[in-house]
Length: 144
Image (cartoon, rainbow, N blue to C red):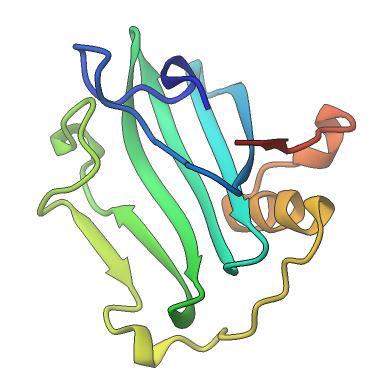
């Protein structure tokens, strides 16, 4: 995936990075007079899923939330910037503003891997972020 699709850092050297076996799609949209981007990345064989939501700020991204599943430890979970989003630095992914919900992966209520198609991957992102991705047309994930 090109670094320019979801940059994290003014230098342009940092970005979300998905390697071999991931299929991904990046969407851009406007809401409340702000621009946002979502990247959905899935590794079907490893049962790994990421849907990252960020606000576009200049040529950079303010990471707001991430919905994830990792085959190594079951449980769907969210990493989210909670409270005042103005304290979330532009171009940073990790920090004290980012909370994991639920806090302990053992507490996850949804533990089943149920993303076995591209359509299911896009539907999951649409559902969790409340964005009608299906209305954007026939989107396809790309292989990295």
